[in-house]
Amino acid sequence: MKNIFLCIILIALVGHLFSYSLYENYELGIGKRITHLDARSAAMGGTGTASGTNIFDGMLNPANIGFLNDGLGFQFVFDVTQLEENRSMPMWNFFDSYVDDATYVSNTNFFTDFGLAMSYKHRFGNLSIAGALDYKPFVNFDAYYEEQVRNNEGSDNDNYPPLLATNFLENDGNIYSYGVTAAFTYHRYDILFNETSLGFNLNMLSGKSRSERKIIWSDYSKDAAVVDDYEIRWGYDYSGLNFSIGLKSEISQRISAGIMYAPKFEMTVEDAFSDLDHDFDYPASLRLGVQYRPRNVLRTTFHFDLEFVNWSDISDFYDNVMNYYLGVEHIFPHAVPLRLGFSYVTSPSSSETDIPSPIINPIISAGTGFRIYGDFFLDLSGEFTHRKYDTMDLFPDGYYNYSELWNNYTPENRTEPDTVREYYVRVKSSLTFKW
Image 1 (tube, one colour):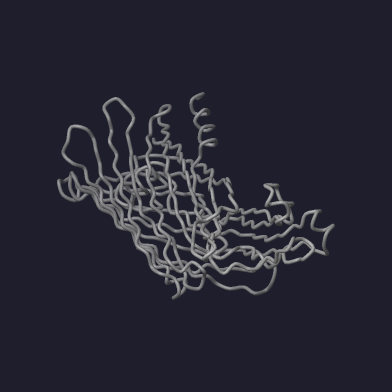
Image 2: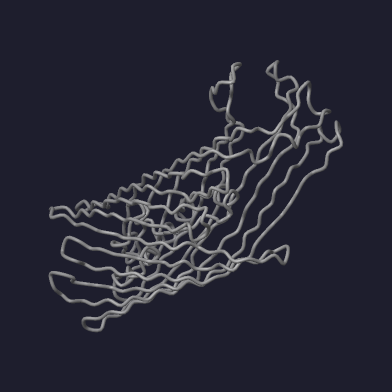
C-alpha cells in the first residue's frame, strides 16, 4: 500500500506535458485537441491503433478495450504541461539586409489536467464483451503570454530602460469528455484472425474557455503621459456529442492491424458575454495502425500509425493533414521494457491568418513501465518537440506612440512578422490496475 501512495505522488509531480500555446488558442481559436493519454502509447510515438493494451488506448481505437484482461480495470493519468516560447523580431543592417532575429520575449508556463477510467470485460465462450467509462480532457485552451515594453532612454549607455507597460494574453478553459466505450470480440482460437474486435465510443462534451487581453501601464508612464490601462475579455461555453468506431484484429501470430474513424461533428458554442452564439464543426479523422512482432528470442514489437485529419471540415481555408507515428517496444528478460518512438505531426493552418504555411512538429519519445504492487502498473514516457513559425506582433508598437515616453524616437507597427520558437518537454505517467 505504501508503494501505491508513493507512485500516485510521483504521477502528480511528474505528470505529462502537452504542447499548449497561443497558436492553437489565440491565433486559430480552436484549442489543443488531446488525442491520447496513455503513457505507453506516448513512449512509442503515439502509436496504438493496432497495439493498445490500456483503457485510454480506446481514444486511439475503441476496439482496443476488447483486448483488455478479463475482469475489472482502472486507469488514472495526471498532466502537468510545460511550454517554453521565445519570440524574436527580425534585425536589419544599414543596407536593409536581413541579419538575424533578436529575442524580445520568452515565456515558460505550466498547466495541469487529469483523466480517469474504469473497464470491465467478460467472456462467453468464443465471444467477449467489454465496456469502459472515462472522464478525460478533450480540448485544452490554456495559454499565457507576458511581455514588457520599455523605451530607449539610456540604452546607448548600456542602462536598463524604464518600464512603460506590461502586456498580457491569457487563455484558460477545457472541454471535458464523459465517454462510454463498448467492444465485442470474437475469439476463433486459430492461426489466422485469432481475435477480432469491433468497438464503439460515444463522448458527451462540455466545457468553457475564457480569454483576457491587457495592457497595464507603469507608474513611470502614468506620471509622464495621459495613458489608460486597456483590458478586454471574451469567452465561450461549449457542448457537443461525438463518436468513433474502430476495428482491430490479430491477423496472424506476427501481425495485428486496426482502423478507427471519427466523423465530423458539430460543437455548440455560446458566447458568454453576448447573444452572438454560433456552432463550430470539428474535423473528421481516420487512423490506420499496424503492429509487427518479429520472430526473435526477445519480445520486440514494432508499431506504425497513419492519421488523416480533414481540417477543411472547419473551413475551406484550412488544409487537410497526414500525420505519421512510429514506435518500438523491446522487453528484456527480468528487466523493464524499453520503448522508443518518433512522430511527424502537422499542426492545422489557415490562409486567413498570418500563418498560412503548415507547422511541422517532429517528436521523439522514450519510456518504460513496471509493476509497482500486485495488479498495479506504472508507465512513464518522455517526449521532446520543437516547432517554429512566423506571425505578426501580438501588441503592435504604434499603440505606445506617446511623445512624452520616448527620446527622439517614434514607435511604429512592424510590417515584418515575428519568429516564434516553441520548445516542449513532455513527461507522461499512467497508473493502471489490471485484474
